[in-house]
Image (spheres, rainbow over the protein chains, first blue to last red):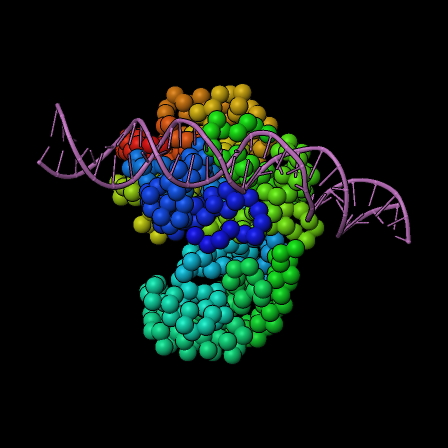
Length: 251
Length: 251
DNA sequence: AATCAGGATTCCACAGAGTGGATATTACGA
DNA sequence: TCGTAATATCCACTCTGTGGAATCCTGATT
């Protein structure tokens, strides 16, 4: 595995590596596989896992394979809430100024995961539950994030994920996506025009300097989220992602 | 802090205790507070936290206080998915047989947290996003879980949480709740009759032997989720919680 | 039913990692 | 600017975490 941090508690680094490996493996992995992937002896892996299982952060399945444990659920949820909480005032500000739902999402493997949201006061509004994951190529936040990456990385990701169509408007070819990303970079923001959900338009921008690629979006029905909405939304979005960058930056 | 497990890696146990303390403290806590709560010397806490921060599982805010870090979000989400995945076939089976949304929720502190769901195929359906937390006294899964606890524990929890009314039907006195829990125990399942959401009825049952108190529910609009629905739902629910108990049991 | 192979689990001697008291540094409020 | 409290770092030392060896367990094969 990758080297430990220059300082810190070695077994702590190891145990989180194990958790990430179990997560990557889809929660159905053997001790031996983990030992191989982690490049550590079996007794070491066993002892760390036994500790995790005893504490509830990993579980051993009936077939002796390992999965992540239930106690991580709450930690993740609270971490999510804390991360979102840091950005929440800014998302709410965005909603107050624009009237449409604001989302914060981060790159998670080859997808985006929604980590915070401030819903629009309108009865008809976008609602994407926190924790939900979506494809990159067919969401505003996803395309904003992809636009930050070089074309080779984009190709790699798309090679892995494919380009499932969420709607008839979804981009479904790599060339079309790369063109769209070029336009996104030129504009400074991404547009999802009914690609994820029919009748819904979304404008998204990445958070500069975020520890993981992160984007903020505003979205709503096309009747409201039109060209004139974009004209006033883009400057506000730009301002707000800067604020979020400041607030969530490492100390 | 509580004693370490009889075996396992001590600093791993310590680091997770710290994460839980940060979570409990709402992600705005100082090094000194953590040292006091954990009953460990400052340099020890500092070194463990530094490791967590370096790895991304904790973050130090601008005011030098600590919060949980972004990398826990994904672990929690994956753990949630893995836990829910273990139960998902059973929840889907429940929906196929009954036609209404099925939820799996666990006790998390003094609330329930929804960890898995299979939505009803009906256009009008209950949808409670995974990760959402709700009060115990006004939800079916919450009351099913409370019914597993003795009255003294129930009094303690309610003393801490209060009994906010979600609807005009929500139970709002301890005596009424204890009566309801007695009836729940006698019946073997909990009923939420418009207590969490107007016009929605819910039947819930706990999963026997779950590592943390866990309940499964089916819910939908009262027009469909009526007495005759209950007659056929209860035996199916009982069967399914047994299956979930089997599938998710520790090895 | 017995045997075997491979994987999991436990043992234990030992090296060095993690510990915590002492000290240095930093940040904040008066 | 200064004092104080909290944070961060240092470092000698103890005991924890390590990993090779041994043992145990499980599933497949005969």
